[in-house]
Length: 371
Image (spheres, helix red, strand yellow):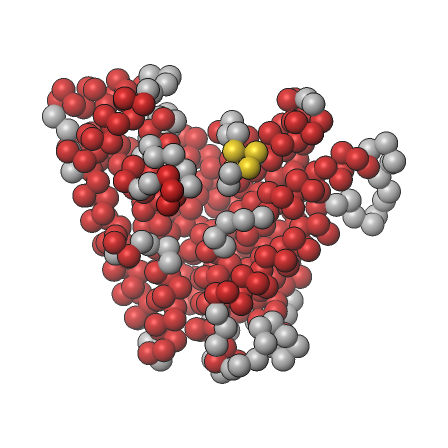
C-alpha cells in the first residue's frame, strides 16, 4: 500500500518538473536574447511559488483513487508510480495539476490582498517587483505568472486524463473546478461589502463563498477526479463527490478560520488574529454579532468598519468571539459537517479497509479536536 511519504516524494519533484516546462515559452517561437532574463525570472519564480504546502489536495486525490478503484493495484507492494501501474502515474500528474492550480490562485490572491509574504517567503509579485526594481512591472509580471500557471495546470490535467477512465469528463471537471474558484473569488470580494447589521445574511454569504472558493478545488474536485478515474459514471461520481466533499470543504475552511483565533503562530505559521487585522467578514464574526449584546454588537461593527485594527482590538475581538459563543458555535458547525461527510463515505458501501483509508484521507482536513 502506498503511503503519504511515498506520494509526497513523487509529487514534489514532479511539480517542479512540470512547472519548469510549462511556464517557459513554448517551442512555437523564440524569445529575444534581451528578453530572456525576465522570462527566466518568471519561470524561476513559478518554481519557487510552487514549492511548499501540505499538498492535502494532491494526497486526497491519490488516496481516494486507491480506495475507490476496483482492482487490487493499490494494495500491492509495487514501487509507487512505476511502469506496472501507469494509471496511478497518470493520477499522480492529475494530483500535481490541482496543486499547480492552487499556486496560480494564491499568486492572484496575494496581488488582490496586497500580501507581502506567502509560506514565509516574499509573495510572487513582491519577489518580481524586487527582481525588476519596479512595482508596476513586478505586479504585472505576477499577474501574468498566475495566468501562465493557470494555463499550465490545464495542460498537465489534459495530458494526465488521457491515461485514465472518463478522460473527457475529467477534462470537463477540471475546467469546471477552475470556473467555480474564479466565481468564488468574485464572491469573496463581494462578501467584504456585506453589511454587518444582518448576521444571518453575513453567515450565509460567507458559507456560500466557502463552497465556491474553497470546497470546489480543495475537496470536491479531488474526490470527483478519483471517482471518475476509478470508473464511476459521471453523474454518480459527481453526486458522491459533492456529498462527501461539499461539507468537508466547508468544514476545512471553518476550521482554518477558527484556528486563526484559537491557534498559535507556532502551529499555524501565521500570526493569530490575521483575519481580524484584515477586517474580514467571516462566519465567526457573523456568529459573534448574532450572539452579542447590543453594546457588544455596536463595538464589533465599529471595529470592523474601521480601516485598521490595533493589537488591543484584535485581542478584544477574540475575547468577544469567545464570550458570545461564536467559537463554540463554529466548533459545532465543523463537527456536524464532518459527520455529514463521514455518513456520505459510509453510504458508498466500500469494503471496510478501503472505507477506512478514504475516511482517513478526508479526516486530514479537519483537526481531530473539532470532529
